[in-house]
Length: 135
Image (cartoon, rainbow, N blue to C red):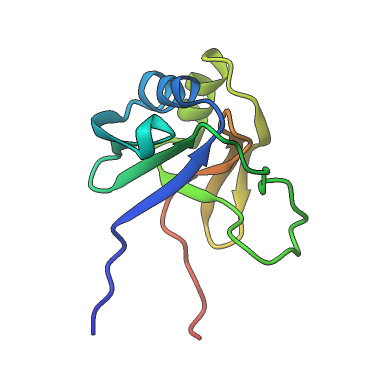
């Protein structure tokens, strides 16, 4: 059996603000959208290179689950590989993106930085190839 990552889905609080962030700032392209449940639920599909990001939007809001302690169980962040963390950092800062971690050389021979999207979802940018010890 072979599992290959296909897509990521996130629920957003403001669909238009999220579309603007992911298309105009991060440069993803809109593939299309589905509107369901009499307009109470929408999915917008964004092309991220070779994968898809789904933005889920519900008219009736749930609670935010993006504030957590690093030791809490659950998804912590998702990451995008970039050619240069420093250049990407500068570009995003010019667009008004606030970073939670400045560009840093990390263990394993990579350079990383972290920022949040409009929904407080943590995103990492990473440069280089992670070097790991044998497991």
